[in-house]
Length: 166
Image 1 (cartoon, rainbow, N blue to C red):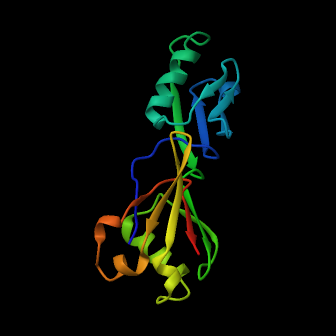
Image 2 (spheres, rainbow, N blue to C red; image 1 turned 180 degrees about the vertical axis):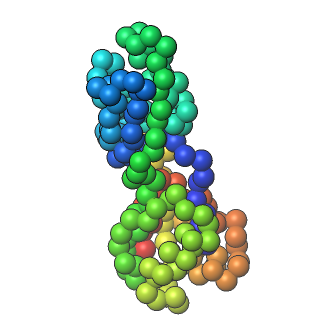
């Protein structure tokens, strides 16, 4: 069925634990805001969105080194909330599906949400996504792909995609 993008980068709504060794007052749990930033003592707002945990750690260490001699920083991903796709429309149980799962589990989750496996609506699914700040509609025929036909239309779902079933 559909496949999902792999490789974790921090996104909005993700919960991170930032630990600055031997500096309890600088360590905290933070939630990435919708603007992609987190706020920490001394260094204030820092862009976290789009970075891997290691990249964020290096960036935080460079900032904390201005205030703490030879700081040691850890970034722990406590909860991933940004990697979700949305499913809505006729024949589906509306809701969010984690895009941070392997392909087999994602396909099973999607199949489990489908109430009618043979309907005209399954041939007219549209995946809505934003690319370069512009909306994009991608047509998808669930029935063809399910039967192993026209597999070139099988796309990778990306975080924040919306799957619309007419």
